[in-house]
Length: 512
Image 1 (tube, rainbow, N blue to C red):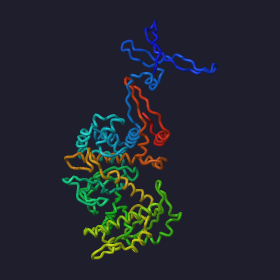
Image 2: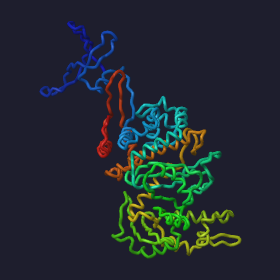
Image 3: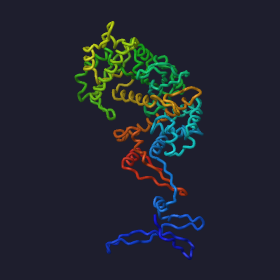
Image 4: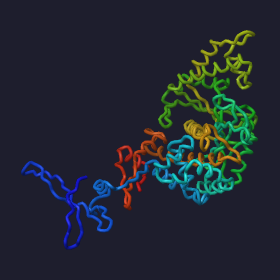
């Protein structure tokens, strides 16, 4: 910026800086130069001092020597407001008085960007709050290792007290994997993609009314019986909380397990395989009329056709509800998934490594001979045409089919959040033992899940859920930046875009 020569006020001894500004003269129809005072010179340091009538942005533009720093505040502004609104910030501060801000920042990173924590340090350098010195890779590892069981128990006790519920949905997750061999919390099992790797199972509880995660527990090995399930939730019951409704994986389904759940009078929701004859019979009875207007429902942005019927289970004739769902858009993908499973079944037989759980599928869809394995085309076509696009949930305690599906999808969302957890720095899989920061890594992932759930719930209450996922909304806020100029107490914000204004208004968030 070019300035005119300094003009010294002889009475006060102050050297003023005046700038030549071009002003349009309407009468002469041409521009004329006009002098405007934009500041003065400090008599001691010789530095330029902008005029008080200038806003910080104007002052900075007129001082080429002015140094400025910038921090992205959009995502953290949203997440910090959410954390305070639900009481998470206060509970974290009470349970981790010395490290709560650092832990929340790591959770903000996982919520808004995700990925291995070795990327968190560079993320923190450009995002508010500016914690890059305390969030180097080495410091992150030490920070996660400092999280003890007592700290986590203290957090749970206070967090559950902060969000009391009469009913909790207990989600059984089995998707976090590790290559760590010497670890008591891992047992070899098959992941969802069939990979034989050590598997970490989790129990995570959500409040019925708040939809927020309130507690989790690491399961040493696969949770595949009702007795093991009951044993795992004993620490939560010690908190004297409400009733539990188990939301379970498809692999948990067996007649004996359902018998046990029913005999214990447990509430549960579980997917049922379409290969079950009694489910197929139920679909056959309703498939011609399920797509009518009476069965039409909407869940978020997904369209479903539903049908529910009561059934009696076991010797006690416990009342359960079978929920059937049909989605035409999913029919093609269902056929592809079915064909992929068939190919897997054939490979298992040809390799001489059959899976006991797949025996019924082998008998129905494969023709096994001494020298060859082929497909039973008639049975496959019959199955694909009749059942593609259908899903089934068996529930004891939830009679509304949309509510049952919503709860089950919440489980899938939580499973995605914990799926294939990255290690704190440079591993591709999660490590959890007493000598590693993995337990702390799992805890901050749980905090991130709280933030995701809380933000999604508030998005559901507005029109935002139809426009964004949680991560897409936070990415929308990435360009909102705070600029601070050296030597100035004030800062300026970059101009809000229209979508950013809409997000802040919908979520009722005030900028700092």
